[in-house]
Length: 75
Image (cartoon, rainbow, N blue to C red; front, side):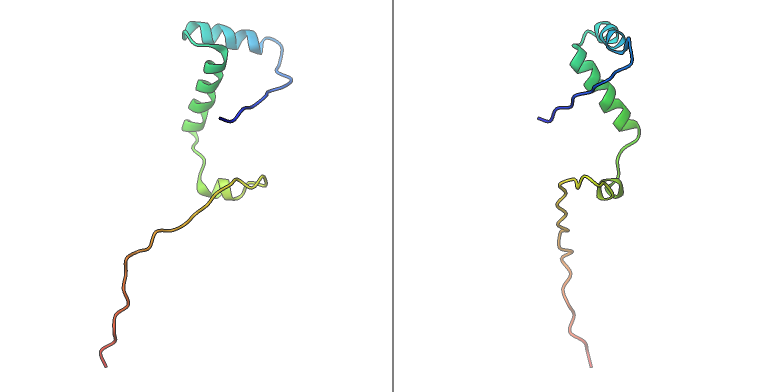
């Protein structure tokens, strides 16, 4: 499981997040995960976005064979 550390939050952000988490009956971390997941679902990342990343996302793409066979030409 991956982790992220967010530094330098504006004043009051953690308190507001904790209040929102309490209203949804979730932990602070679960609320942060839900917010991030919701934001990413609204604006999904595309394969083009992943390939253009400087970080070099570990993407392996192996296309499946099409199942086509060569035909013998009739001369």
